Length: 288
Ligand code: URA
Image 1 (cartoon, rainbow, N blue to C red):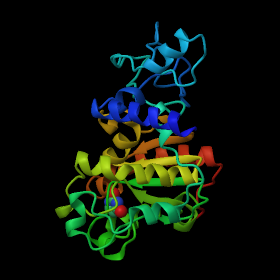
Image 2 (image 1 turned 180 degrees about the vertical axis):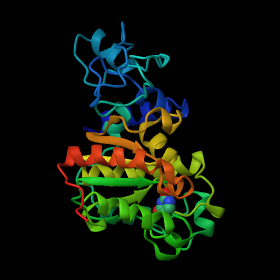
Image 3 (image 1 turned 180 degrees about the horizontal axis):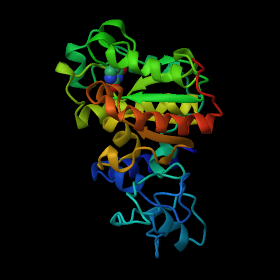
């Protein structure tokens, strides 16, 4: 993009960000919803709203690829229309502008540096960047490092991590075949949930990692990861096991392994979700 155009778009984005419009535009609904199951279907908009850019483009008699559709008010779940969750079909104005051309893991890691952007840096031992294959077809996204991960600098190496490894192996894969990372890269103290400002600060690095990998499937583990990636505040049980689109990858949310340690009976639900992933990736379950 030419630099003056880029500057104008960036100013527009900053203005939108100040108004906290990001989730509003991300949560828009397309007239041909990307839904890979027979559920949740979201009604198309009768009259799509237009962004200022699209309105200006229309007035100038040109078409704008930046036209935006807004989200519809969430219809109530019914027998036919279950729990709709906002999702983005194509890169939104925000996403299109924050995709970095020729990005690499090295560049992302260098940009993170010895990060002090949020308060999580104060108590961390290591930045936990992510582990696995850069060519992975499957990416698992968790919440944030715990004690063991903070010490080792690697995601999912504690008790929940051992369970995740078993899940991956049950799918016929090895840890090194997939990519594993988190919404935040530094351990939240006392294993508390990452806070909004921490997620806002750190998640762009996760999005960049996903953009570099371009996996076929993203599996969001737990509420924090799935709500961050889908830009929703809905509870995970409303949309767990459904397919969504995330920047060109298929995304499915399932329960976090730590939740499974506390609620082993939910393992069967998670296994169903993982089987859907295996179906998309053409994987056979591991033979015992
Ligand atoms: N839980 C997470 O969400 N991530 C980790 O890396 C470990 C535990």
